[in-house]
Length: 357
Image 1 (cartoon, helix red, strand yellow):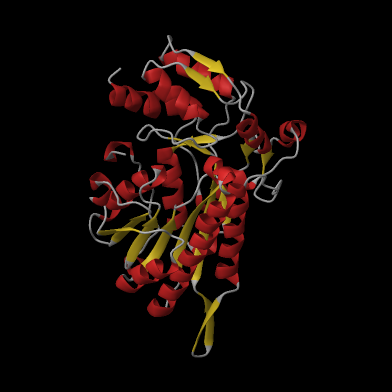
Image 2 (spheres, one colour):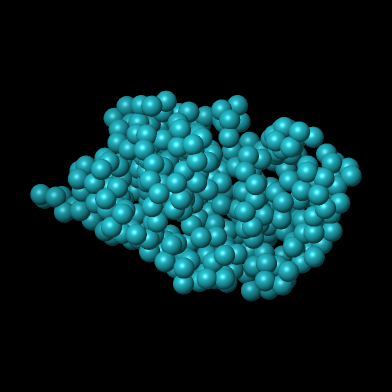
């Protein structure tokens, strides 16, 4: 992501809180790429930014960090070693094994998504003990935590709140839901006893993201990637067979809005937040509506539908849209990109530049 696509949220941070290192796990992923650039743009070297991924970061991503590590989040000893080297005051935990791969290897998903998260929550708690103050823990959760039993019920439910339909059908969704509850425990029940006071050590904050569309990175096979795959294929002049039905509908947002929402939640005063986990949403088109929008900009695009049973089943279990009124009320969340602006102002210009079309 270039600085031109970033919109800096109004900051509620004070000079007193702008200390300590920011640890970003999963820094090599799609969101990690955008978040590292946004954090580097904001702090301009005034805070230490630590990037971590299972593989060594590419040179362009490492350039946004003060230090980077090739480290598996499920390796507790390696995580402890990083914690001892840096004065961590914020953890942005992006690392995860996504839904499609998680269904093929649920044991690995459990190890990475749950045990890896447990290791980083412990890191946050240990860092808080050393610092004598709470450590923020930002966690991107997912629409996959929802599970609607039938397509008829999905359509009847419409926009769901954070407390509805929480019966995920994928290991990825189960894992993310488990980490939300682990975060609740660390935020509300795990306490540091110091002298005559007891205080919570982890300031856990989470967003349940819908499908995210990025113009800067190529889709990696996620369950919601049919949207960005349509666009990237059209821009390259490649035929595309969509793996869900034309009527499949889930919410989406752009990557700049996703990163901005995390940063705005991180900035929000704790006393303003009524929840630990928030929905955010921007637009909720059907696959057919996405295809029609792509054809507005790429009229010769060749798109067809070849639904796969497993991925269609997963998408059908996710709600048609998510009610994000709590985020709008508590920390003034509002997406910058609706469906039309997402394509006209962000996706199409950047993807045309990417592919020279």
